[in-house]
Each structure stands twice: as C-alpha cells, then as structure tokens.
Amino acid sequence: MDPTGHQPSPDYQQLAQSIKDWAQALGFARAAITGIDLSHAESGLSDWLARGFHGEMDYMARHGLKRARPAELVPNTLSVISVFMPYLSGGQDPDAVLADTSKAYISRYALGRDYHKVLRNRLQQLADRISAVAGQYGHRVFVDSAPVLEVELAKQAGQGWRGKHSLLLNRDYGSFYFLGELFTDLPLPTDPPLPKEHCGNCSACMDACPTQAIVAPYQVDARRCISYLTIELKGAIPLEFRRAIGNRVYGCDDCQLVCPWNRFAAASPETDFAIRHGLDDVSLLELFAWSEADFGQKMAGSPIYRIGYAKWLSNLAIGLGNAAPNAQIAAALLARRDDESEIVREHVEWALLVGGYIQQI
Ligand code: B12
Ligand code: SF4
Ligand code: SF4
Image 1 (cartoon, rainbow, N blue to C red):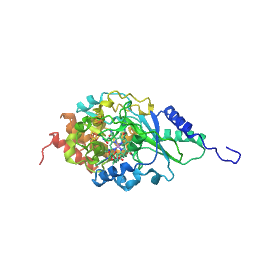
Image 2: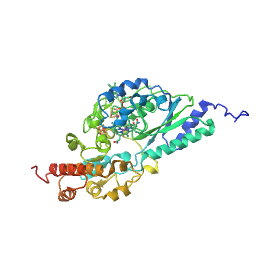
Image 3: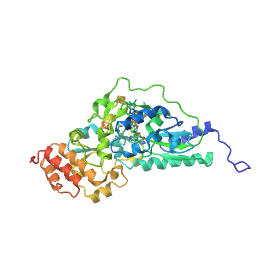
Image 4: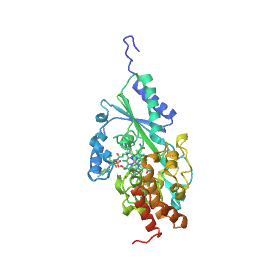
C-alpha cells in the first residue's frame, strides 16, 4: 500500500509470468493469457445454433452471442487466463474395453472425481495468489458449465489449435484435458495464437465417429454425438443411434482415441482423477446389478452422478442389447423389464428384442 492507502499498480509483465508459474505449481499443465475479442467466432456459434445442433441443450441457446462476448458476461473483463489440466489416469487399454462387448466403456474423463470442483478450486487458489500482488481486482472463475467459448479462448491464448473434432489439441498434451478460465479486469499482456494448426490432411476423427456426428471439419452435431445421447439427453435415445453406441455407457472418446496427437498423451499426476471402483475395466452386468443406493453411494463425487440412476440403467441396457447374447444378460434384462422407470423399461425392452431374447409381437 502507498501512504494514500492505494495499492501501487503492479508490473503486469512480471505478474503475467508469475501467474503462469503459480498455475503450474497448482497442477495446471500451462496457463496463457488472451484478450476478450472473440468476434471471429460469432458466426460459427450462430450457425451451429441456427442448425439446431445443440438439440435439447437449451442453455446453449439461452445466452446467444454472450457466449462469445466475455465482457457482456462479466462487465469490465479485460483479460482471460486460460488453463488446462490433463485427466488420463492409466488403467485398461480403451480399445480393449471397446472391443469386448461384455464390458462397459466409460469416457476416460469420468473415471475419477468430478473435474468441475477440482479445477474451480485450483482456479480460485490462483485468483487468491494474484490478489496478494494486485490487491482487490475483479475476477471470476469458469469451468465447463458457464456460457463461455472455452475452446476458442484457449485457442486465442495459444494453448493449442482446434482439431477437426472441434476440441483443443496441442503437440505436447494432445486433447485429453479439461479447460478452465479466470476472467479478470487486469490489463495483462496477452499471448499470441499458434501460428499453425497441425491436422493437415488427417480426418481420422471424422472417419472414426460411430454416429457420424462430426458432420464437417470443426462442426459437431451434438444431437448425433454419443456424449450428448448418453449424458445430456433426458428422454429416450433415438433408435437410429442405439446400435452404433455399442458398449459406450457414459460419453465417448473415439474421436480422441484415433487422433495421432494423443498417441503419447501422458497420465495425469492428479490423485483426484485416479480411477474409482475399477470403472476402466468393468462388466455391463456388474454395473447393471447396482441398486439405486449403490449408484448413489459409489457415484457420489463423480461426474456420472449427475445423469441419475434411470439414465444410467437405460444406457447400460443399450450396452447389454448390443453385447454378445448369453443367459446372464437375458436374466438381468428380464429382471428389470418391469422397472418403475418408464424410460428404463423402454430401453430394456429394446435390448431384449435386439438381443433376440424375446420376439416382436
Ligand atoms: C456443449 C458442449 C458439448 C456438446 C457439444 C460439443 C461441441 N463440439 O460443441 C457435447 C455434449 C456433444 C459435448 C461432447 C464432448 N465434450 Co464438451 N463441451 C460443451 C461445452 C459446454 C460448450 C461447447 C460449445 O460452446 N459448443 C458450441 C459450438 C458452437 O462450439 P464449437 O463446436 O466449438 O464450434 C466452434 C467452431 O468449431 C466453429 N464452427 C462450428 N460450427 C460451424 C459452422 C460453420 C459453417 C463454421 C464456419 C464454423 C463453425 O465455430 C464455433 C465457434 O468458434 C464446452 C465447455 C464450454 N463452456 O466451452 C465443453 C467442452 C468443449 N467439452 C469437452 C469434452 C472433454 C467433451 C467430450 C470429449 C466428452 C466425452 N468424452 O464424452 C465430448 C467430445 C465431443 C466433440 N467431438 O466435441 C471439453 C473439451 C476439452 C478440449 N480438449 O477441448 C470442454 C471444453 C469442457 C471443459 N471445460 O474441459 N460437449
Ligand atoms: S484425428 Fe486428425 S483431423 Fe482429427 S483432430 Fe486429430 S489430427 Fe486433427
Ligand atoms: S465423442 Fe464420439 S460420438 Fe461424439 S463426435 Fe467424438 S467420436 Fe463422435
């Protein structure tokens, strides 16, 4: 403080460097800084919404272009600190799980603790460290759920380029990480976007997508994406996608698994992302046998908890319908044929039919 009681202006160049060092010490792979001009992304966002690609995710349409205008979301925002944290935690080979129809494939980001809390908490710690130097300043932390174009901000900050699957990619970490941001009213020096993208002629992610959800490079029709169908969609999963979903019971990683930049993606040192309940290599039948109390107890603190027990059972029923038929599967499905949830009953009925356990009347 100076004698008048004001905090002297910090050296912003020095502060920016300190922020990057502190972010790494807090477990983020890297921090970078960008401004608030995302006007170049507005037409892509409008186009995506106009084509209805958001499906039932009303929150995507609700904020309209505010999503691309950080200073409308948080007035006085001048700089955005973009961070990312890898989440792979080793475990069973994903391709082996996908190939075994008796197993449940759970998206690699969801095998441990809910990332929202982990990242938000670390970003808040970063914000607090900044106040020790900058004094009181305007800021807010965001992870995933806010109306923010996170991938675009990260790209602008030079954290990577956008892959054709629309996710952020970089040479050192691939794409298996979460993004987060700290909006501030500090005039921090910004980092430039990367001079070059590195997808070239590759289109492996588009070719590998089981439901052809990547309808053109950088354009994902969420209504076709297995991540949307198994996590976001509240009602019944449309029949046309059920076979293609295979044994993916929560999210999907196919477009990332085939990406050459993920070949050497390293495991995350974060203990919060350590695999819980053997979810990296578990059978559909074992999960389908969980009672609602088991689900509540085992999935507490996991991102999977948010989809609820009925959606969980419905997704598992699709997996069981797609599995190589056997007597245990038949018994498990028949036992849930009269489930109290209509949505579960409907998915179980489908599974019994496609598995050949019952005949269409
Ligand atoms: C909604 C959402 C989804 C939706 C829609 C996905 C999507 N691509 O939009 C669904 C449920 C399908 C989804 C799935 C997944 N998601 Co998601 N999702 C989000 C969320 C909340 C918003 C994304 C968004 O703004 N979409 C709106 C559209 C318009 O954005 P866009 O597709 O990026 O489009 C831009 C360009 O591609 C281009 N564009 C789009 N259409 C068009 C059309 C034309 C003509 C042109 C010229 C340009 C253009 O312009 C747009 C603006 O720049 C973000 C978090 C956040 N707040 O940002 C996480 C986020 C993108 N998801 C994430 C993850 C991890 C996933 C999954 C991998 C989860 C999983 N394993 O199941 C999958 C991957 C699917 C995929 N290939 O995208 C991470 C990605 C991390 C990373 N490395 O980039 C994020 C950033 C969450 C986080 N905080 O970490 N997700
Ligand atoms: S699979 Fe190929 S096209 Fe898709 S994001 Fe990776 S490098 Fe880019
Ligand atoms: S997450 Fe799966 S369904 Fe969605 S775009 Fe990627 S490969 Fe396709």
